[in-house]
Length: 280
Length: 252
Figure 1 (cartoon, rainbow over the protein chains, first blue to last red):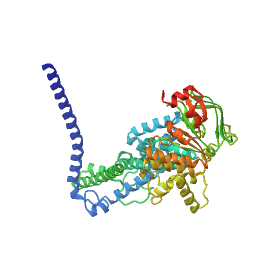
Figure 2 (cartoon, each protein chain N blue to C red):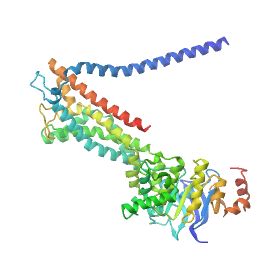
Figure 3 (tube, chains in turn cyan, green):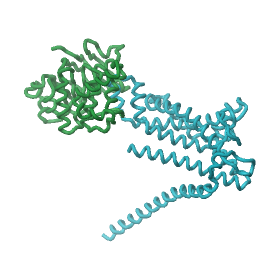
Figure 4 (cartoon, chains in turn blue, brown):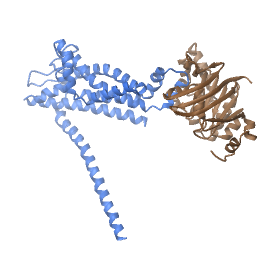
């Protein structure tokens, strides 16, 4: 009896210790994020102003704004999404609906490998095949680099979302005399829309935060540039330049730009949470 | 008797495993034929050979003939899409599309290009919903999601969807097994009503259901057709001892 009681209390203590440990780790993991966001907000909020959001950077050390970087990031993300979303979604549909063979398996493996490739390598690749032949860095090159990063992510999330569509729905359409492609196109794809949209938005958030692939593809620019064949500024590269410079005023601008970027990514994540919450 | 479907010496295989053995069966036009038998006896597999739904299983193979209106549906060059339009199917679990009620019924009409105008489409959808005894319940909310309907309504929507493409034959794979008694009764009344215009094959686990709705009953066991007779005879004076044992609940 006494022995049983000891075993019992020992087990209770172990349970308590382990539960507390995991709880502490969970608090640690989330608090780091909160601290980072709080710190960025604290450092960056004072430099945010309308001029900061619309002006271009002034000559070195004199401040100015990041309007051109906002436009550049938006344009390159747009280009990447315009290429990456259709290609990625189509590839995902293929993998899920027709890719249960060696060819599909090979593509799946390549996509997974591509997701794991450090993004700077994609930058170097685009530098070799686009920047060198063109003779200069450009928004086009930057957008292409981001598209390459985006495609495998979108393809794999699309595939997973489509796999969640119950087979009974496919059978229902087939039994009405629908050919396979129509079943995929107007039954399966719409059924997976909210999941695919979620994946697409997360992929957009991911590429908006990329710096490395833009460093030698889009380079940077101190001016507003609305042409894809010219070097283009981006929030991330601008932050890098500001932060590595010696001037206090630019450091402050880097914080403010970081706040903007983190805020954008946070908003996308919250929107995604909201959209998926409605479904389940 | 005028045969709508005649099945001759049908064998069916999942890979190397044989699931159906040498089945021959005549299904008369505008009658209800029920398939009964214990789980795994092959009745659903057999039902799915009639509109070639088993084609979606890569390892499945078929030997023998399924002749509908004088044509073997397994003959080379058969248009499977046209076959499935002629032989509609309702599944065990209702499977509406993630679309509005209207669009669910309109889908088959649209992909087969049956309608001549927007008005014609509306009429066809209404007729299908009326024939499925669902119109009065949904006429005011045709544009709302099909998922908002109850289980029984969803199943009747799936029946309407199948009717909308004007098939000759309707295959029903345990259409009421997931429904409560009242919804089940509605489906059964519907089956009897639809018999006037359609040939119906229904798989069921419910012996009373088979007795209530069908004209003929086929009893399957372990992939073999044990007995096929008018329902009246099957349930009162079956030829086979096995049939009697199953129907009276001595096994299965």
